[in-house]
Amino acid sequence: AQSVTQLDSQVPVFEEAPVELRCNYSSSVSVYLFWYVQYPNQGLQLLLKYLSGSTLVKGINGFEAEFNKSQTSFHLRKPSVHISDTAEYFCAVSDGGYNKLIFGAGTRLAVHP
Amino acid sequence: DTGVSQDPRHKITKRGQNVTFRCDPISEHNRLYWYRQTLGQGPEFLTYFQNEAQLEKSRLLSDRFSAERPKGSFSTLEIQRTEQGDSAMYLCASIQGDGEAFFGQGTRLTVV
Image (tube, rainbow over all chains, first blue to last red; front, top):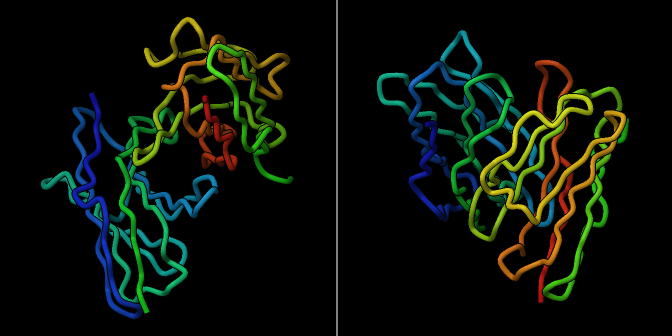
């Protein structure tokens, strides 16, 4: 069965500092990996996805993530965060595109001035 | 195209009452998913429709839960005899073919 582990439940960071949100997955089949962001009282918005091809994927709002098959990781990074990046971030995996996404528990990113 | 719409946004109900939520997917999206998100957790898959056919149901979906998608358009999720453990955010997502999953803003259910 597939599963996702987000290693940090909360990540506090100062504005303009770099940030990395960690995600590890387990799967016995080919995987598709996603990062979603959720602002308070909102639905989920896709930040970026890995379906195939280059292991470094770039998304919206300056975020990027690297698929590492040997370490079964898909960590999310941003070189310089803004106050507006404060939100909950979810890593997700599926065995077929956007079919039945399996989500991690989420990481709350808190950006402080 | 106004995105995925869910109604109501918030629902407070007494334990034992029945509630029904509605999801209007993006028009012509043939696949529709329901997820449940409890506080401090990621969304969990509940059920999936392709057009009007309900193709998969999670074990999380007890006998008190039922979902429909008549005519392959909007979908409803009904919870009968609500329990406090049903309190959660219920999210709907729609997909066209192999495209991106678009999520609605969710319905937050509070059972008191």
